[in-house]
Image 1 (cartoon, rainbow, N blue to C red):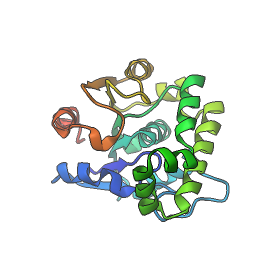
Image 2: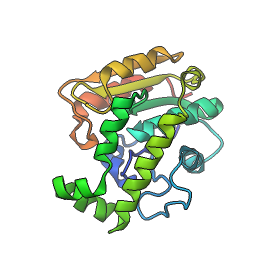
Image 3: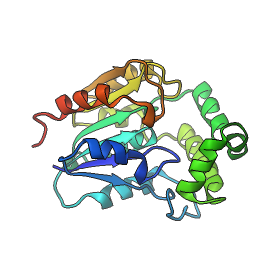
Length: 228
């Protein structure tokens, strides 16, 4: 059964390639979401509806798939699983902010400022320019901020939607993640039918800082017996 990896905000298909390589020989494919990489940002902006269409297009056949989503990708994966339960065997999220409040929104929007990124984290700005083009990365940052704001006021992943996720779910969160808080992971899991939480020790939000020695054995145990 195929495993689809879904990158996070401001990422691209390359973001999860190191994880995909470690998961071999499992059949793994990395999805690139609309507006990211070198794809066109839609005139109406980014939307989770676009992302759900990206997930659907990545399915190799009409069979079920496992989904792994990092950060924003995990949010999209759960939305897809709730809408299409017959297509998803399981979902793993990593560093995904599934519950929002005003303080969390404001904190994230402060980070989604292209000028601030260029000034305070120039190495990150250089990476974004390499991944998405310069100055195109700046438009992507703005489009992502707009998406986050719209979804906060009219969320796609409501408590009712979480309750409709039928497949097994594993929510992974770092104990030092100041974006996707571990306490929120526990609260979100409690709203789903079959969800567990893995708290990774000494782990912050960036996916490239996650210790594979902590994550991979847990994924193997979670997927064992769920191949259908």
